[in-house]
Image 1: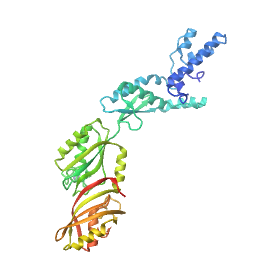
Image 2: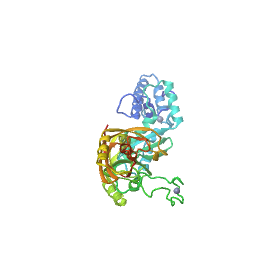
Image 3: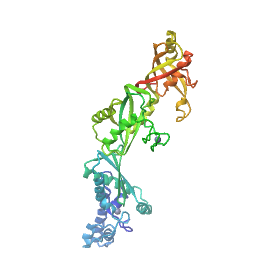
Image 4: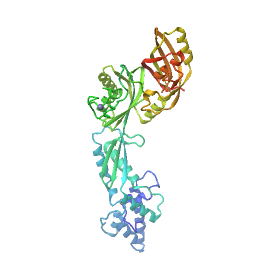
Length: 429
Ligand SMILES: [Zn+2]
Ligand SMILES: [Zn+2]
């Protein structure tokens, strides 16, 4: 290889990068050149010529060989990297500078090597049938990572890095991308009339118009906005996504242990925030409308399992029901008997059909308790599988939910108030 091409220590060593662990490619390359130089010196001493030493001087740029013949090394660029591998330190310094002012414990370096650099290496590799080589991209990211780690005192993390830095070689172009920060917790909603997430005004689609008084939304605030606002301020994040374990109606409250949620904060500047303090801040600003508890650092996997579990998790509701006729003691008994352990066939409620696909879901009611409040009002406590629409379980939704309280009573029944009492952490089948 050296007979045909000028190669720096790293680029020569990289062609054997798959052999012998725990050394750098630069060390590999230098070792190969050194062994060849020993051989070349032997040949010279035995009077067999200086050809090998000359190759090492001209194409290996190897000073010890030059010393034997009393020659100077010409400064020539490496045929593969053109000197880039000598500049790893510069790239690392650039990365360290780009990371300044950012809050992180660990990082990952990604490297993109320009097409012509990679092509040059591929061509030489093919010419010599290289079997144990490593890519320049791999070597650059590892070596830059080591150097950045030395400068910043932070560690390289492959699985869940706080920040990813992309280095374009030769560039240099450096872009820093803080990974999302996930914070989980539970919320209670203590007043009615607040949606879980922000609803864009349907007339202006969020731009702001006369109908929405320029706010761009239907409701003045939402659980999402109440929680996400202070979170974005604290973390300096670019944007945030709110994931709830299911959702309640605008007019339902959530009490008891609250509903689990995870907030995903995109491109946060601060990661190590005091969650207890943040919790207090959210609750102070929510003025009793919403309450958060148990804030904790979380991860992407939790978002997925939150969504999965919400479909099966057990939920408890309290429903205030108005019936079209007088209620008897027999009615209460009938309700409890009919629904304990009952499977409900439910088509997508008419009131959400405009935004949800029409499909049949089968959900279980584990337990139902009914209490008469006055002649035509009852309080119902229902423990059921997540994803069951409780208002329709009461009304029957014109036969789209079967059976229903209305059907069992043979009279019109509607839910006028709904409270979420608890959302279990663990799914119950
Ligand atoms: Zn090179
Ligand atoms: Zn509007």
